[in-house]
Length: 105
Image (cartoon, rainbow, N blue to C red; front, side, top):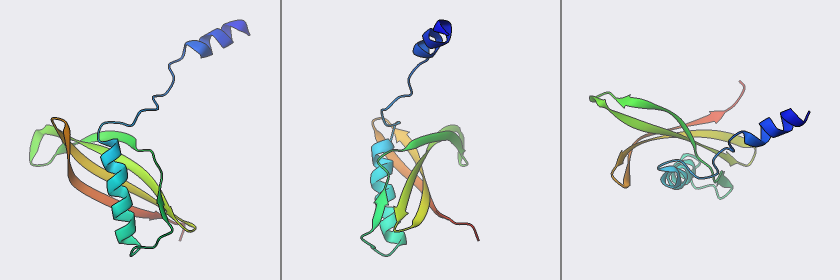
């Protein structure tokens, strides 16, 4: 039992910091969700961004885009937003975005 406890204590803790371009993704997700629901004031975006596997730039296979996922809600509806960024030095260039309402039809 002690060995298990020691092992668990040695495991790395997940990082609480936002991924690269994370703060930009959260701000853009708020704008995207607000636009999608026509300015409904019940729109809320989670204050965390999750980094997904990067994708290659279709115009230049040597470049990679960062893909960040942000969740949001409006009343009882849940949304998933994915924002695609190209990190250019210390800046993040928005290259694409998608929004999907999570629903069982």
